[in-house]
Every structure is written in structure tokens, then in C-alpha cells.
Length: 531
Image (cartoon, rainbow, N blue to C red; front, side, top):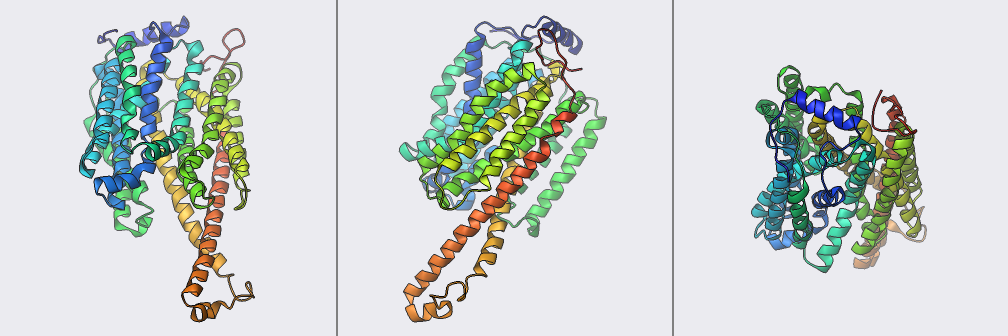
């Protein structure tokens, strides 16, 4: 254990500079591997909880006496609380110390997880999920900061590979794990399962985790308030947009106006405030700002796709819940295969080209999905998922190294919270865009296909009189025809989404070349030092 003592920013910067020059960890700790395992376990259950509850909503609805619309607040409350609280991470880390923030956030997360599992009503569940979301808001960014801090510069690519693998695999496998727990145990265990993993990890963190120096900087309360209002409006707009028919709804228009106004006020306020919520040096770092955009695209692609693929596998191909989870698994396996390789490549080659290759491979995997058909087996699904995972695994680790290698280490907590925030933005935007396009393209395709179902296209059936002549049996025949048209139109809508995501990934592929190029530092290795 180590205590935190207040120090000046200049003194902290000198300590950081010496740590880099000597290739030693900023916060040395005994049993680094054991501590890293504990930190990863805590972050893993936190990332799982963002998506693991999705498949359990129908069971929660009956158990908690909720409606289809109100039970969705189990997800919305968590997402909104996380988004609103995340900007506080950097300030809290400086004010109370990184060790205290991570340790107490983990404790609060575990307590709220147990409370969610025992929730007697929907209102109680929403309150507990808000608390869980607030604690989760600090765990993700602090995990990235801690893994940087306890690793010497030469080992940071490997640390970021582990973190990137976790960030990518958890959202992909969360619904599958949730489906398994819900089907074979009880939906309450999707929260209780956090305890046997988190409690031992918390003990190790209390024993081994050192702390960054405390810096008592003032909180920009007005900036936090307007940013929180903007983020809350944004999350509500993306979450409820499709069900409210987007801008034909006064609610969505109001949320959009509030979002734009609040975020604009925040930007103008931050430019002139002497102690802004996020340290101003972050905005002037081109590599970091560009990496935020890349992270948002990754969040949109991964989370948006992962949110609709289970529906495709179950509604079109009629796979059961467990088989659906297994079909999603190769994407996570591909990420794991290339994440550690990406850390090795980023040390020896230009990481900008590693990111470019990753985008191209991910786009290739997405392109193969545009050739899916209604009567194919599982092999094309498994192959496309694995190829995508390999591409995504090559993107995240070099991207995080490119982002943080140019930042002073004192900016890491703020930078990590912004990175986490933009990843959440991307996920919310991705889900909204993919679901909206899926719904609207299905309607358009259904109308186009139905227009070709005529007596000429089906000469053996007299469609205008089939119901009159066959009664209820005729109605059944028409329902079967409509069901097949709906199935075909849904498949076309999915293929349209795959085309869109392919072109988005290809459009971003060359952009990493605009970032600053790493310079070599001895032995032919490329450490995260920038020209």
C-alpha cells in the first residue's frame, strides 16, 4: 500500500520525465502481474455490465412488474449515469488520489451489483443501476491510467494490448454470457456474478495498488453541470429516437436543442475558464484528438453491430440463444489473437500502418458479410466474425499508444476519461444509426418486395380471391407470404447496414497516416515517444 501526498504539477512532471528516461514505471509496485490481473478483473466485470443485461430484460419485466417501455430504463439509467459521471474522473483522481478513487469505485460497484441482484421493484433497480453506472464511470478510465502507470514504457504496448482486448471482447461476449446465465441460472445472477470475481480483486488492489500524487485543483462546477446536461440529453435522444420517430417527435427535437446548446456552452466556457473540467493541453494535442475520433468509430462499429447481430441470428436463421452466443465468439477470439500481436508490432513498426491494416482487415470482414444469404450455414458467419475481430484487435492497442504517448503523464486520468466518454458516444451513436437504418430499410424493402407479389409472379395462386375462397386457411396462406416477405426485407436491411459499415471503416483507414510519426529509440524498437 502507498499513501498519496499533495505535490505541485511541476514537481510531478519532473518525476514523470525521469521515469520515462530510465524506462521504469511511473508507479513501481511489487507483483505487477498480480496487480494487473486484479485491475483487469474489476474492469472486465464493469465492461460486461454495460451489455450483459440486454438479454435479461424480458425476464426482469415479469419479475419486477414492469412494462416493455419502462424496463428499458434498466439499461438507459446505467448508460446515462456513466456518461454524466465520466468527466469527473480526472478531477477526482487528482483531488482524492488515483488509488482511493479506483478502490472506492470498485467497492461501490460491487455493493450496487449485489443491490441490483436483490432489487425488489423496478424503481429500486433503476436507483441501484444509477449508482452502479456512476461507479463504473471511474473504473474504465482509471484502469487504463493504472496500467500505463505501473508499466515501464517498454512494456506499455503489452499492457495496452491487454486493455484493448478487454475493451473489445467484453461488449461482444456480454450478451452471450448474459444469455447463458439467464437461461441456466436466474437473471439476478448477471449481477451477483460480479462478487466472486470482484471481491478477491478488491483485496489485491488494496494490498498492492500505489497512488498518483494528489493535486488539489478546483472543480469547474458550471462546466461539469452544462456538460452533464448535454450528455444526458444526447443519451436520451439516441436511446429514444427510433421509438419516437426521431425529429417528428417534440421530445427528440427538445433533447437535440438542449444537447447542442449545452455542449456549445461547455466548449465556449472551457476556452476561457482558468481551471476547466478537462485540462486544456488535451485539446491542443492533435494525436489525442484524432484518436478520440477513431475510438468513436470503433465504438460505433463494434457496439452497433453487436447490438443487432443476435437479433439477426435468432429471427432470420432461427438459432437458439446459446448458439447465437457461440456465433458471436469468433469475433472475440480474433481480437484476442491480434491484440497482443499489435503490441509487438507497434514497438517494431510504424503504428500508424498497423492501424491502417487493422481498418482494412475489419472492412474486409464486414464486406464478406454483404454476401450472406438466407440459406447459408454457420461457416460464413464464423469466418467473417473472426476476420473482423482480427482487424479490430490491430486497431485499439496502437491507437491508444498513439493517443497517450504524446500526453504528459499528469494528463492521463483526464485523457482516459475522455477516451472512455468518446467510446460510449460511439456505441450510442452506432446503436441508434444501425437500428434506425435497419428499421427504415426493412420498411422500404418490404414495400418494394410486396409490390412484386402479384398474380403474375405467382400464377398458381389467385391472390385477390384467396381469402374469400379459402376463409381462415386463405388468411394463413397470406400470412405465410407476408412472413416470408418480411424475412427477405429484414435480410436486405441487414445487408444494407453491412455495406454502410464497410465504407465507414474504409473511409477511416488512411486517416491514421495524418498523425505524428513515432521515432526509433535504440535497438530498432519504436517506443511510445513522438517526434
